[in-house]
Image (cartoon, helix red, strand yellow):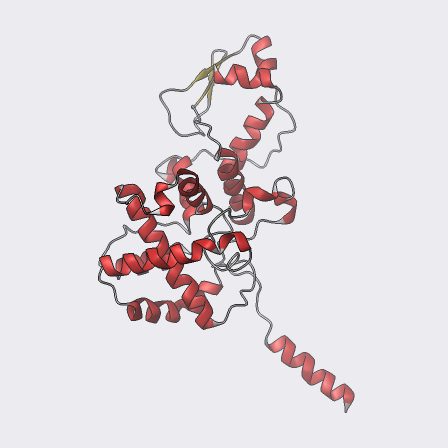
Length: 298
């Protein structure tokens, strides 16, 4: 009887087994080999978006009341009834789960609440930010460090909601999104750095580049490095007649974190189209010392 019971238990366990990652998956926890180099680059500082970091860190709890307030403001301003959102979110809850690389242990009711509040917060925050519609008492936008931290957190790979959900909720709120083929905000950020239309993307090879000279070595060899002022896409590097032309990149405090998250996205999702990773590797070859930086800045 014991053996029979074990067989039944195993059969029941196997029956409930599902493919851990499906084609719908687009939001990932950054793999350990990538995040080990700088853990903080992949963890939200002030606000949790989506299920991965919800209630995970005490420092994120203070923003929950602001998120709720923003969500309420958006629904009121657009005259959207909560049940409209709740019905839609409930209908796509199982599909929503499949967008994430790990099992989400929240109940359906808990997950619907997370999606509901976080979506409303995102819409209202972006509306106030880009429309410059906020008051002095609006803590999230009137406090510079908090404002900047929220914007940065919203671009982290682990801190995302699927864009297909945001798009539908936005559209049924008497607003409108053009049909954009992106998965989430980290993906959107990556898209901004790539050439348009996508058909103009350069071809890639499987050849592994082991070494390239640094900016200093190239300069000492007589090569000139100049800004490619005619192009804005980072991938538009050209070499002609002894001159390497590189598009200008504005480097800010958060630049490293944003690029780390775009690279992490490519390593998890765009294996054969890792253009941002290629760019970062190219710059890593060029920059080894402060002198290399000086040459590129000039």
